[in-house]
Length: 185
Image (cartoon, rainbow, N blue to C red; front, side, top):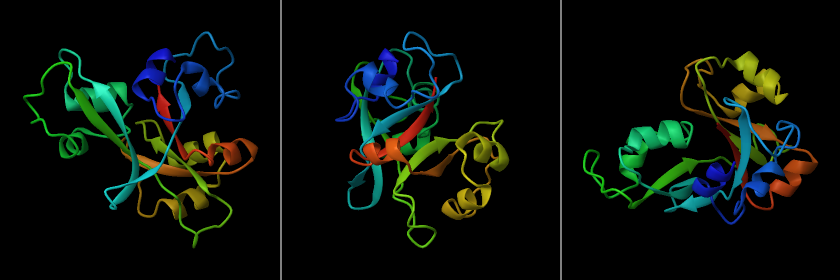
């Protein structure tokens, strides 16, 4: 969690304890998190270049890092190599070590035409084992609602992002800061 709080630092997350407070139902102990556990990490959702909603994290490049490895391993497929290439000045095969690179993650404010009940959305990276039904079960959101907020998305594609609508007392608190996405450790 210390590592995640470092690479996903924002005005909402400055230390690991900030992340634990958003995961009281999924992380039984503050001392450890099991591998492949999905963890809620809050971040502000900003309008970037008047073009789309997202947040840009700064990541310090380590030896042997590539845009692809950063996207897949460090940021759990919340972005991808192509997108990282677009938002950085360094060419794909010539990134200097220890420079800070942009890691931009998309987010969503939803669609009022689908429902006015949801104002918070989780940016959710798809895994190979995911299906519409499994995501609906895990998130406790009806499959039909998930499809309406993610038109044309194949929930079984194994990669990419979907947006999960959220509401409730913890979500009201989170909406003060922005949106929440899920990262897997």
